[in-house]
Image 1 (cartoon, helix red, strand yellow):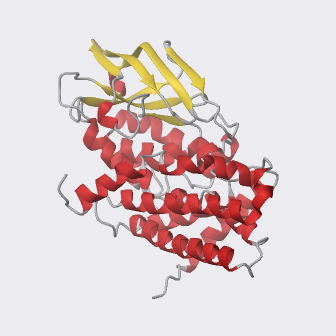
Image 2 (cartoon, rainbow, N blue to C red):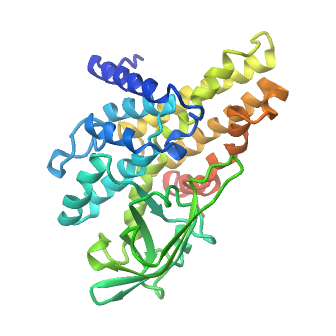
Image 3 (spheres, rainbow, N blue to C red):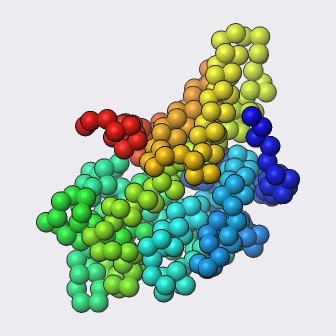
Length: 365
């Protein structure tokens, strides 16, 4: 089979690589750039080039380009380590969610900001006792006239300390079954009653945050979609979150850089590198199936499980390849320390395997 891309897509990928090389030339930290990389000016530049909202329909104000075009742009940027975190969540899933479920007023207000790279969004999903189990959340949103009063706590909320808005999931009917009593809200992060505390992890980064909501009053116009109908909406949103190229290439550059230094006469390292390269190519095909809408519903869970396993194998390989050098703090040591996060964030691999078993394969619970 031939996987040659159309000439215009090849040219677009080259343009994205050129920009990525320019913005990363002076960076020391280039791994996991969609998670920890923060550069608002780069997000504005992506907006100027029309690289945010690329696939959103023109009638919604988007650029109406193909999923393959967006794929090659984000693949080039993230592989090179371009710090796209300031616009990544909004472009990847907030925009599509508002297009699918938001009101005309919400789309008119928020989509242009996202496409211009001017708005940073965080996701208010995980809670201290409800990580991958979204149905177990306890943050409460209680209707009070034309407002909802929100109380509760979220955690592992990336970039909450810098965000303009939080896309919040809260329980609006505490008496309903777990999957039926939740709703989604647009919450400006400057509202009274919001407290954010960054969490410094073992790699010395603090993009994850804890967020407290104490009697935060959100206008009812901030409700997205159907009240109590979050489960259906968020499942669709997570399809956009899980199966993308970001789950595969976060530390691809590190693998290439270390591989260039490896003694390939060592049969164990050579076999380990070949295994990773083979898995990378399989993972990329799984991602392309998602991009081209050729995968069955919920299969993004399988793509994420496979791709994040590859990322962990890269971390193990670079440690094996460099031996004692890996113990000196730097890119390799940081990658080894960060590696467990790959199969936890965005849904743990154990939870996602259950999703594949039940929703894709139809196995009994």
